[in-house]
Image (tube, rainbow, N blue to C red; front, side, top):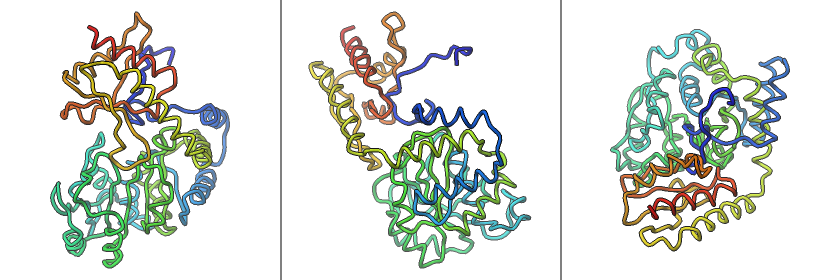
Amino acid sequence: MKEIPIPKVINAAGKLTALGGSAQSDTVASALADAARTHLDLAAYRAAAGARIAELTGAEAACVTSGAAAGIAISVASLLTGTDPLRVRAVPAQDGDRGIVLQAGHAVDFGAEIVQMIRLGGGNPVIAGSANSVSAALLDATLATPGIRGYLHVISHHCVQENMTLLPDAIERCRRRGVPVIVDAAAEEDLRAYIDAGADLVTYSGGKAIAGPTSGFIAGKTAYIDACEMQFQGIARTMKVGKEQIAGLLAALDAYVTRDEAQVATHLDAINARLLDGLADIPQLSATTRGDEAGRHFSRVVLAGEFDVRKLVGFLAAGDAGAGIPPIRTRNHFLDQGVALIDPRELRDEHVDLIVQRVRSFFAA
């Protein structure tokens, strides 16, 4: 990074791919470095990693991927090909039934369109309902149409959160129809809930909540995971995972499952409290907190009020080199509502005063 002078930023946006996901702990960085200096049987390492991930998630089996999006394509392919090597080699071209049902409010763009991930795996997206409403009965009717091979349920802040069929109801309907269920839980914190709920395959990002390197994994039923592994002889070859990613992911997972959740929550709340205290006396600004829209257990600071929030976001993103303040990147999903968010998860203690200083400078100008 010293050779390529891209400025580092203060990440007040959260665990976003566009900003590099999560910063690595010393333990994870050390695991990456150790793996980079060695050779091993990668297939055996993948298998051992899968067994460890299955243990941590409560799944029958698991496999490592390059990310959650890769996990969607691989999971879809596994439903269509099984372990048939000829069908694996034909993906994404597939004969016969290949419908993958997706609720309309889940057909999101997360930096790429999720329906494209379905197509990469050989599936044909079949959209259930409308963007603002998918009843359980309508989902059931869609699952009953000819040619359906699977159902993809997306858990994400990008999704419409109201008037969709919730996962337990969706799984129940799929079970009645004999339709396997894939859950996209890319940025989610609970490693067991979706397996426990009855999902057949669950795809996670390793670089979001888990705070590992750019990586991911699929956990689920053994038969489907075996078919997922077969995809590495096909489309997943373009999504291959190195020993460094696997080592870093395993180190991050071990740290994640042993973390003190109460301590983490207290730390994030303290960061938010310091931000609110530092911004409290600015007349034009309303600084409050808001819970995560996808239901995860933390809050963000909301910046709103009688001012142009886009100008504030631009001012923060410019930084102030003279004052030693790097660019500050806020979470900008709701700018059209006049709101910018500060996500505390990737902030260090020393960032808080710099953010407060820069926001106050904007309103003092």
